[in-house]
Length: 363
View 1 (tube, rainbow, N blue to C red):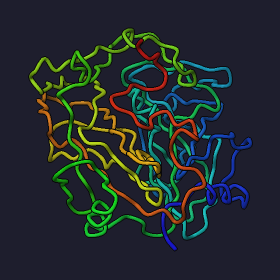
View 2: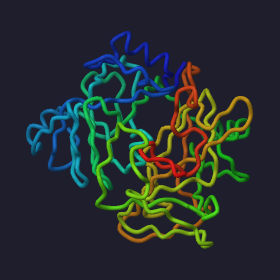
View 3: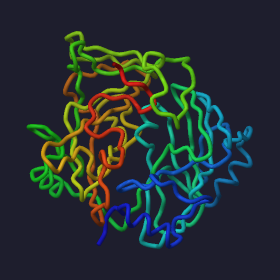
View 4: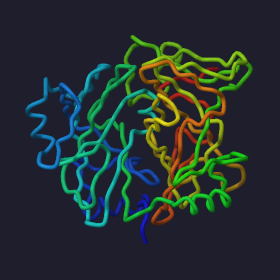
């Protein structure tokens, strides 16, 4: 049977040696359909982002492009506007039938930290070919806030696939009719994806619609929860009855989908990359939705998708209800032992508009 590997199978990869690491896995490192990846002890500041290409290893490129080496063993600051390459603690010896892909973790995307996985001989980011055997590296570029990271920090996650798992358009429609993937009276399903639109009417008495990141802030420690005041880092945005928002070029926004999202237990979902057909902006760095996201077996379901948005080159006006992203769904190879949610201490189950876990909740 083909599909996305669940937690039990990921654990088996470790036990069988297909997944290796310099130290034992953390207790909570395996998620329902993914594995968190951990930074190693060194970061290489490089002149520019790169791919090694089909004939070179990442280490070969680092020898030529590195500017200096940063020790992460006790923690270090990564500055905005810089590009860093960090060897990860994990490495792979995948069997021939298994491939993988990577994405930033939800909290990473909500801090506007741009990350991409690189492998030896890679010709594209975040994609690990079937049967890959070798080290893993993470490109990190903080965009809005300087950050503190250390050996063992987890900024990205990897998902393993056995064969083809993506749902076709007819399968997506049938699943939506049976499970209500997106809470919409008229869902837009095209190809293998289902559309999400933006909520700009706002929530609460003040009509809060989102947040815009502040420049020149203090540093954020990626491993510490609830440590920072929201208003030191974010400017709240309100609807004022206009139901629209002008995105300023090169500014970072946290917004929320109008529709609630549901990922049934035997499926996983992913936000597909930025589509230039819907506007000059990028949405959602962090794209994985684990099985059980927005799912409540006892009744009631749905969690809205928080969207990380950045406009490119020109100001762009978003209107309430405008399509801003698309989800694709994939089959799980088996039911996970644990679903996304409270039992795992998941940070974003049943969420609405929500910043990352690093900020203190307003009272």
